[in-house]
Image 1 (tube, rainbow, N blue to C red):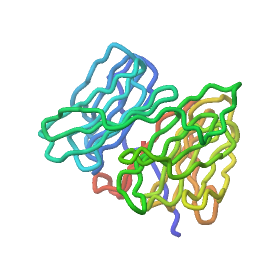
Image 2 (image 1 turned 30 degrees about the horizontal axis):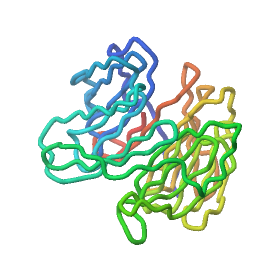
Image 3 (image 1 turned 90 degrees about the vertical axis):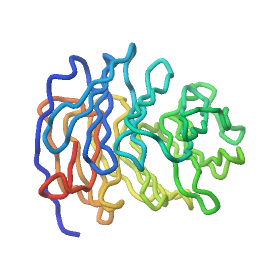
Length: 286
């Protein structure tokens, strides 16, 4: 696979006075949403670096996700458990949304009128072998396409592995012990593999169907934090955050470190990348 070199295209400043907690590129890479501890979410043009607008909230913004089929709609997860829907133009299709807090997962149905109604709820599954000494905390949620449904959810827990759940039938399809502290997660576009940040040693890749460990990528960890990880280039490349200012890029097939994206300051807890026409190279990394 040809090596790809990354360079900084722009530096976005002035919108946030506090720590950046999350960021997310829109599906076609036109916009970048950035959240912070002060409760602000800013939206920027990736082409010009111009700030479009800022959404101000009363509590820290901890997560962001764009609607996969729209450049004009995204959600903010706040520290008080609220889910804020930022809508810029009319929604045309029904969809499902999910929220997770502590040990519960809720799935909501959103119709064309933006009416949100509860669909199903996942409590602690009896199939999970709980460690009584550890709290049951959800570290990540990710929709995948299952063999019988396109609405299957992967639920990851900090201390208790991961499970694959069908919210329509409210059934657990598979449980993966994983046996590590799970931070950030990412899943390949074909829903076959999951990458996890294990919070102590680096990153791991698992086969979702077989429940088999496939590879490990050692990375220096100085703090027990939810470091992000992301599959890019259709799952051929792995991009990982860092607690020491050194987010890295690995070739998944060869497991070789291909680039060290060194930062001037320490902890990198937000990353994203998308292939688009915005940049001359065809790729943008934040």
